[in-house]
Image (cartoon, rainbow, N blue to C red; front, side, top):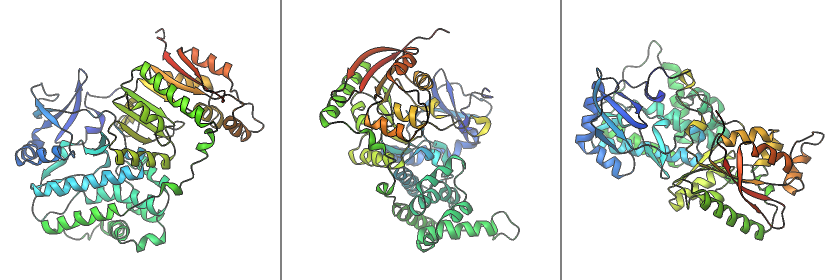
Amino acid sequence: MSSPDPDLPLSFRDPAGFVFTREGMLYRQINQKGREDYENLMRSGLYDRLVSDNHLIPHEQVEVPPERPGEAFTVIRPDRVPCISYPYEWSFSMIRDAALATLRIQQTALQFGMTLKDASGTNIQFVKGKPVLIDTLSLQRYTDGEPWYAYGQFCRHFMAPLALGSFSDIRLVRLLRVHHDGIPLDLARALLPFRSWFHIPTLLHIHLHGRWKERYGGAPGQPSRVSMSRTSLEGLVDHLIRAVAGYHWDPRAQDREAYDVSVTYSENTAGMKRKVVNNFLQLSSPQHVVDLGADVGLYSRIAARYASLVCALDRNPAAVEENYRQVRANGEATILPLWIDLTNPTPSTGWECQERPDLFHRLPCDTVLALAILHHLAITNNTPLSLIAHMLAGMCRHLIIEFIPRDDPAVQELLSRKAGMDIDYDHDLFTSAFTRYFTFRETASLPDSGRIVYLMERKVMPG
C-alpha cells in the first residue's frame, strides 16, 4: 500500500504544518494556522537559545514551492536526523535523558513566553549522542494562568515507563510499542508494585494522577478548568526534573542471558580479531555501520573510527544501557545504541502501518558488523542460514561476519540446549548460503580458535 500523499506519515496530525520530502530533501511546511507561533518562536530568541543549547534541531527558511499552497505560510528545511529511533528501542537512561531534555526545553520556553503544546517521546531524537527536539511546531505562545496541557502526555510517555523500569521490570517499557501515545496510567498503576506508592513522584504523577483521570477524565461532573499561575507551572517543571532524575535502573541486575559464553578464546585471539575487524573496516570505507549483537559496543567503537554513524543493536537491555552510559560519559557523537531483538525487529505500525516505518527502513547502513551472532541466529532461533544471508544482503553493501565452527565451546553450548534436534549449521552450509548473495573479498582465520572473519561485498542481483 502506498502513502496517500507525499507528507511523511508521522506528521499528518498537526494542523500547524507537516513534513514532506522532495527530490530527496526533507522540508517542513508551516501552515497559516502555525504562523503566529512560528514567528513568535523566531522573534523571541527562543529558537536561537534552544539551538545553541543543542535542544532543538536547526533549520533554515527556504524559497521552495509549498506542498499545499492553499494552506501554506512558509517552508523550512530542518537538518536531517541520521537515524530515527523510537522510545521502545531506547535504554532506560536514554528515556530518562529524553524526558529531562523535554522538561528543560519547557523550562527554557517559559522564560521566552512560550510552552510545549505536546510532550511525545517521538518528538525527541538522539543526534550526536544527545536528545534533541525535532518538532519545531510543538512550541506555542504561553498564556498566563493556563496549565501545561502536555503534562498528561509527559506522564504517559516518560513517567510511566521510567517508573515501570525502576519498580517492576525493564521489559514493560516495551508497552510503548503498543501504546503510541504513551502507557495508559491505569495500566501503569496496575503493573506497579505496592512499594511504588511510597515513592512520592510515582505516587503523585502516576497513582494519584491516574486515579483523578479515571474519576474525572471526560466524565460528567468533571471539575472546572484548572488555572495555574506561571510560578506554579515553573515549580511543576522543576519538580518533574528532580523526579525524573531520581529514577534509576541497575543493568547489573539484568540477566546477561549467557551472552558472554561466546568469549571462549584467548586474549591473543581477541586482539587479532580486533585487528582484523579494524582492517576490514578500513577496506570497506563505511559511512554508516550497523553493529548486530553489539553488546556493550567494543566493535562499535572500532567502527566509529571510520563511520559517521554506528547503530549498535542488541536485544539485551542491560548491554544497551551500559553502551549508552559509555556514549554519554565519553561524548561519543557517532554511536547510537538501540534495544533491538533481531529475531523480532520493530515492525511498521500506526495508521495504515505507515505512521512509524519498520526498523530496516530507518537504519542507514552500508556496512554490517555481524560478529559472534550468526550461531545465535542459526542455532538458538532455528533460523536457516539462507534466510540470514538474505536478510543481511538486504541491509548492506559490505558485510563483516564471523563464522564460529561447530566444535567451538560456544556453539557446543548452544547445541546442547537443542538436544535431539538436527541443526543445519556448518561451514559448507554457511559458504553455500552466503555466496548466493555476496562475494568473499577477504578472509582471516583467528589463531587458536577455528573462527574465521570474512569481509564480503553484496553481489548485484539480476532484476
